[in-house]
Image (cartoon, rainbow, N blue to C red; front, side, top):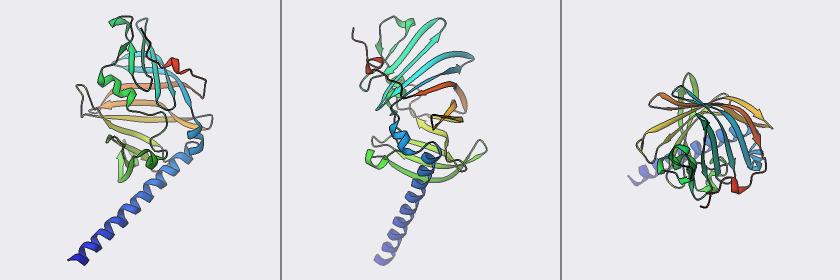
Amino acid sequence: MLKKTFVVLVALVTTLAAQAQDVDAILTKYFANTGGVDKWKALKSTKMEGTATTQGIEINGVMYGKAPNLARQEFSLQGQSFVQAYDGTTAWGINPMAGPEPQKLPEDQAEQLTSQTFESEFIDYKTKGHTVALEGKETIEGTETFKVKLTKKNGDVEYHYFDTENYVPIMVKTFAKAGPAKGQASETYLSDYQEVEGLMFPFFIDTKMGGQSIMKIAIKSVKLNEPMDDKLFAYPKK
């Protein structure tokens, strides 16, 4: 019985090791095909301009990102300017309809800014304390993909679906941690990859919940490594 158990354990370890090699090979090809991991590591800031469409309404906006985890979104609606930002500690926003003063964002809104880091979680994922696993293949809207499970150090789980031909993610599935949608899956579809200064970015993003599109974003321009003062992201002091 002991010998049989040992054989089973050896087979399990061998399988897990093979899966780890497979998923690392997928990530290596992903970074190679999108500009190279060294170039991604050297990226310190992004500025993206585009148009979001939700419930038939078009909204023009700008999205700023800066390493390690700073974020800011500015958009205009009905002649008024809105802001949502994260300074690494506090997620805050300005909503003219609720008053002119900046306010801390509710937990469910804050999660969208605080749950993501500027650098890809897949870069040096072991050093960051994350784990990745290949869970086979799955067809996403007619495209065969590798299904990669990312378990972050804090326990959050995401599924990334990499095109088996080009090794770029075409869909990311995440799960809401707070608010009315807590526990529900959100699927973000990525397409129209274009090169910007040697790096590949998706220029069309479609976010769905329950199979229904809730927001589509068409990127018009991407600028890399522009100087950005941390004050751009800081929660304004009253």
